[in-house]
Image (cartoon, rainbow, N blue to C red; front, side):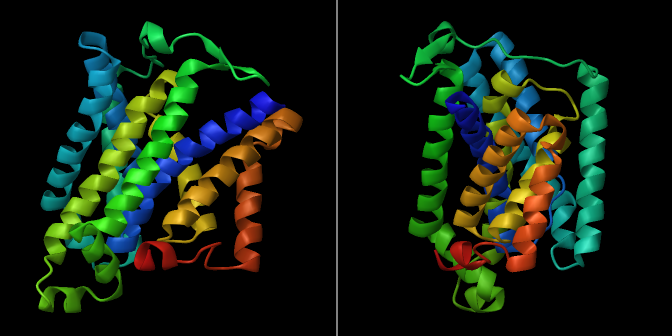
Length: 286
């Protein structure tokens, strides 16, 4: 049971890391981004290729950089034309890009499931007193916690973070006061993509990779965002941990319902509080 709870916590942190990118992009741009799973899987494959030639640490560093550059190109070439469009148009264009990315990766790498080889120092398991637990999973969890703190500090303590929070409320006023909302939008979109790419590379030694893995993690991450509240930073954190634990515990007691339970939880939250647990206030107000 303690090991199952820890599994749920680690999986929840994975959802948190993915959902944070969705949250900050939605909070700033009001963009429903179904290509976010594609960013995850691009990062996973970039990390795989670099890891095989240089090492895991280099792969984890290269993945978010490559994905951020891809996101900037995507934003300039296509996506910024849809910032002010209806959500349906945003969903269609980002979903289309996600399909193209998945099929391109399938052509390059085939559909075979791949795994990373992790360094010797994170192989094996640690004795936590109440259970033995894989060393790499613990390192991954600690890394995500550091990442969450870093993103929060970015939003709260930097000029771009200030523009993000102000731009959500009134983009025109920020521009009149001298804030470059367009540049900030590109930076925020690239940051959200980089977060997905980073977690794609870092999580793949645990969950393995294949071209469809991006969609596999994208859908629960959207559930996390809805449960936590669209645009809410701490809502994404709480929602991710909640979804991870629900899935893990349901797998233990009723495996067939492990996927269903998160949608039931989402429906219950929306019935009680349609705006989600934290609404939009956290990204906007800090």
